[in-house]
Length: 244
Image 1 (tube, rainbow, N blue to C red):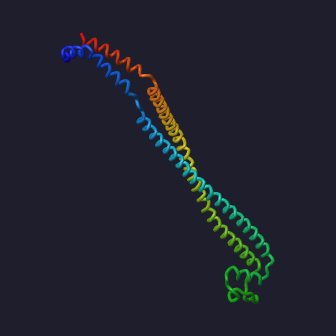
Image 2: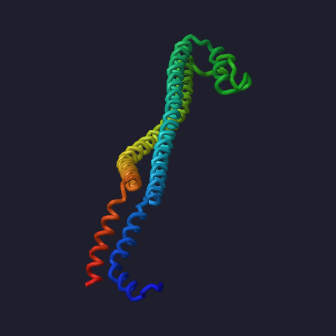
Image 3: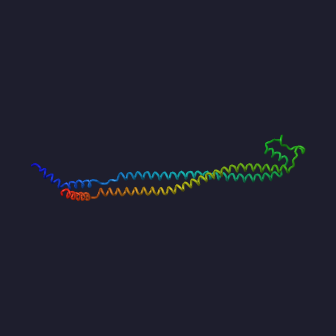
């Protein structure tokens, strides 16, 4: 029995809406949203944000290392300054003792003293008869006292120069520490804001990932009634239109 082409064509024409409905329902039934690409992209972004946080911490650590190194230099210099100040006190004591002792020097002792101070021997400094040494005891005491004080002053001056250099270095290090602390505090403030934004972005990404994973999970588990109903409704409408 040969098929009636005319009747078959007429039947398909009348049922074309339902055919389209079945195709539409199948597409809606089988197509599920998948957000794996978006989730992977946000995970990559979170990795970059965490690296930025690590870099910020390293920058702060470097500033702290500079400050700690400067504090160590300052502490060592302060110790040296204290030792130098003790030397000055010791020199003052020795000078006073030496001046007091000189009040009872004999001419021979003065000769030895001047020889020690100047580096000359008996050929240049000697005690002979009164015609060869025309200087009284008082001027000798005055000159001796002056030389002792001059030696102490010279020693103090050298110590003062050394102390001044150490103080200058301390000032430099203190200034550098101030600048480092200032920069660190400014960076900490900026980093706090940056970290807050980074944390907010990371949390937002994580929330989106969780929501989309839950959404994908629900889509995978829920019955496929919705696409079927949509297909049926669409088929009914199309069929009504096409058969008129």
